[in-house]
Image (cartoon, rainbow, N blue to C red; front, side):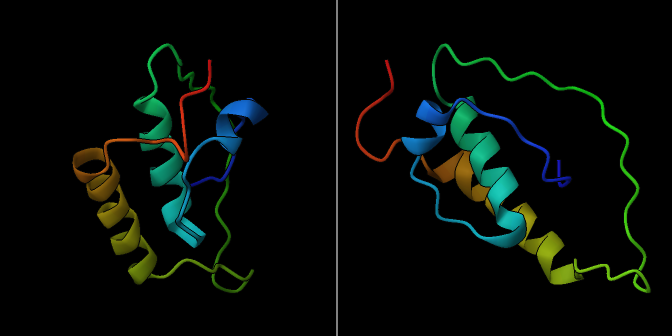
Length: 88
């Protein structure tokens, strides 16, 4: 999930009430979009090779905990994914 390769229709993304930055963004946006009726999520395989620390790896263990917290938060506690009203 944490590759940062995501593609959305602009009208859907603009109507989401997104709050996370950094590595919390992907769990949040995935959970919010999953709650929208009629929206289907597709997974497409990609080739991904993570950077080493020497190459400038930026993620730390705190980012992993933040991602887990966001998965729980947005799947269990947040009900309405929209800023205002649903996209038709």
